[in-house]
Image 1: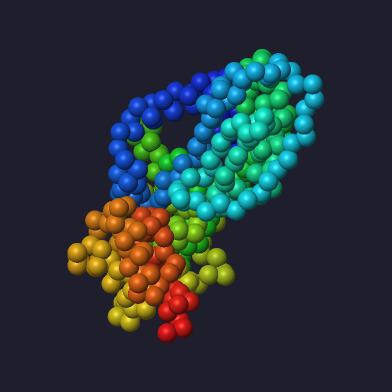
Image 2: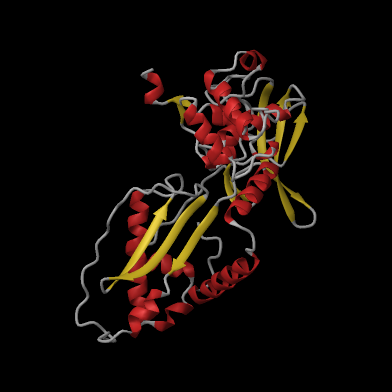
Length: 354
């Protein structure tokens, strides 16, 4: 979906350049400091902050174009090709990373997409469409005055579609139907409805209206946060309202989910906490070692307990020394409860053979 249907390509490029320069001017902290700030903000807002797109246009193009023997219009255009490669991301919070650079007399377009937001077929269409667009732009400078919508249609660029039940709030598209379903799996919640409410001045809030046993807000929030690691289309509601009944149409409890039904990502009840699994114990031990024996609460996030980006690799390394693999530093730095990270802990092969 294009949120700016009437914006031209030229206007979009000018705004992108402006935001890039402003961001660079204010980026005066280190990468690790940035990760710490990001983790704390995520814990407060109740969802991961994802960077929509990173654009990296190499300055080597200028050097290549200054070289000898560069024709204004090549005698022939060599056919393009696409290489598909797996990429292990260092930063799990970036949706798309678009790079362009010259190599062996050719212009390379490189698009790295996070598997949760874009598929291989969409990447192919994006690269092919961008190639056609850039070649056309070289011959049609006035293409900068064309709207984004017209360019998308003309060059067949991929488009995301959001159906009924989706809302745009807090810079995210949110699947409210899935959010309602998840909330209803919490014991004590009989019905749930998630809506956007206006809040002055000109602000909006995602509000969860619930029927059931009051006082379950912490458990509902923990359930949602635990699911965020896999479900990028969810965010935690900004507000919770408990009611005697729901008046909105379609908000009644579906027949396929009974109140209090548990799922694999369910929040552990008190009995579960008393008999914590091996993953819980291993993660707790690793955290205590890295955080100087500070008290660890698996129902809070890593950042909420003073965990930092610089310590995260040490926690993962200590887990490995205990015979466990699975969690990454990015898993630790997310807004979800540590119990969700503990579920990722699995004995690695070396320890199984002992």
